[in-house]
Image (tube, rainbow, N blue to C red; front, side, top):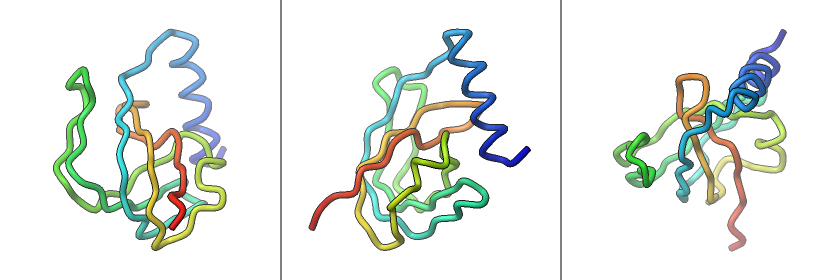
Length: 101
């Protein structure tokens, strides 16, 4: 089982139990993508969720993604909007949208 398959299975289990944390909506610059590991490195400003369950200072951070499809079409150097949520004990990117320049 690959990392992405395992993470997807864990997310499905959490969804079936009704375990969902508040999402964070942010913007950042993509520095690197590793589809094999299911990770994306994003330079982002300070972010925090409305329920205070997620807070991070501005930094360059490696995030796991919840599904490999989230990385499709995204390239290093692009500015993106992204959503992240606490899943599987970590803050993971759930959605990415490229910002047109």
